[in-house]
Amino acid sequence: MSDFCLAGKILKIDLSRKKLEILRTRDYESGFLGGRGLNQSLLLKLQKNDISPFDANNILIFGPGRLVGTEIPGAVRMSIDSINVFSGGIGSSNVGGKFPYYLKSAGFDNVIITGRSETPVYLWISNDMVEIRDGKPLWGKSISETEQTLKSLTGEKEIYFVCIGPAGENRVWTSAIIEGNFRAAARCGLGAIMGSKNIKAIVVPKSDSNQVRIANPLRLSNLVQMLKKKLCSLPSIQRKKEIGTVASIPILNHNAAMPVRNFEDDYLPEEEMKLYMPERFKQLSLGAVDSCIFCPITCQHYYKGKSSIIYKKLEANTVWDFGPRLGLTSPEDILMCHELCTQFGLDIDSTASTICWAIDCFEKGILNNSDTEGLELRWGNSEIIFRLIRMIALREGIGELLSEGSYRASLKIGNDSSRLSFSIKGQDLIEPMRSCKGWALGIAVSPRGGTHTRGAPQTEFYRVNREIGSKIWGIETAGSPLAYEGKAKLVIYYERLHAIMDSLGLCFFVSNWSSPDLLGPKEIGDICCYALGEEFPEEKLMNIGERILTLEKIYNMIHAGFDRKDDYPPDQFFDEPIKNGPFAGEKLDRRRWEELLTEYYSLHEWNPQTGLPTEEKLIKIDLKKYL
Image 1 (tube, one colour):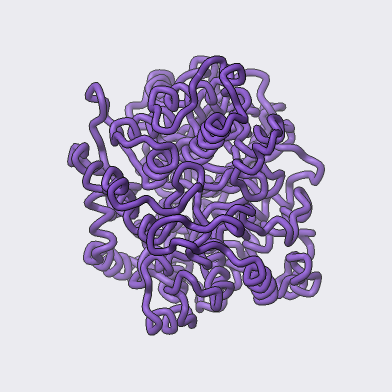
Image 2: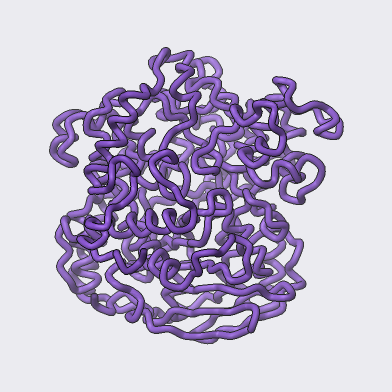
């Protein structure tokens, strides 16, 4: 593969020995494009098999996507990979913003961190220069305090960084790595791993240098202008520009994909739903917007909360996590939950899930006042929820029990509390799975443990018609929520597409995952051709996606022993139907699920009994050497 769109170097840092090593990217790239794909390859090559998440020798890898550094809309994202603290399998997250671009501009395609510093440190990377600096002045500080202190320490007015908050420092499993001071690389406990290494932040200054060379700048520029024009004309994109991802809240509820009070239902009745409509949050908007670098979508909106506090971001996840799920009805309170999680460096989804479990346990008498040190855990009590967020981040009181997620907490408490913990592969689940069958399959089989951004399709939400389904995916039922037919093929399509996009650093919002009118593998192949100087027909690109996904399956085989038994939703989604709304009475069918899994594995050419890649398949796609 060519060297176009590569900075050319990988930075490897051993914090225990304070040793820096520079590797050539071309010696490790191996056809995985970059970002997530290259990270997975590096993990399997460099990491020992008998390692635990907080072992000093564990590896944490940061990898901007291959197209980051260009001006392609949405080419802004970076993958971060290590062991998943919840599952012991693959831990993988992805984040956008501006840091990925400036890290690559500073000269590095990837940063590999191993070892553990004896004292807190941060990394300073500028124009190929790397320093391990004293981080003690940063330790214990919130995300915004960290930014201000970094500016003071470096003397730079404009910096770009990823960092952890107090939650990561305390090795809270539900912690995240924060980009800038409001975007989260969440799930999998990667903030806790960063904290275990005593590294507070990685920082780069603003730079006008750009390490990236493009194969055909003129043709790529023409394509970029066409894509920008298309993005600005689509109604779905206009809605994101107008109100952000909160725009999807009504769509989720309409499709019974709204978690209500710890999944007791998946649909919120219309009168209650009025409390969470996007217009209620729009009323708090300051009218100011921002975006990841070079992105025309501007889905980042600024809001005014209580006491004139200004919030820089709000996501649909935050609304469903702390609204219908925990019972908060005030937009200001929901905004405050988002801000508290951000400043403490907590993963919003995992934190809300764990609090949800605790309240449900308290409501049902499994936890009592002595367990909570007098706290009355009730749905909709904002002050209690604010307090629990802080206690989790600092591991104080009941926060110690909740700091490792609901599944782990339920094992400690017992008393049938595990039935109130909704998790897959040990990691808290945020998505209802009873109505849309393709959505459910994509979440269940995700190698990183649940979550909808590793292959779960949104075609069912948008009810794409049979003609479009057949034309784009070769699946007439792509837009039929209750159909099991065709959904295995659809999930595999999006698994591969998501793996490619994460590796290239492309935001899903510019792809046909967001809207059928946007980029699919053919259009992405055209972009790659002009940027990288090679032909990327659709089949070649999707085969790369298959190889990346299989690397993650190999990692899970080696480190976690996952197989078919780990690709199931929680039992409640089979046993308890949706109570309200257009999908009332719907639940997953066990027999149909078994057939769906078997079809899914067979289409992958994996063993349908075990759900694992066969030796023949690994040889066929040249991955046997990784096992």
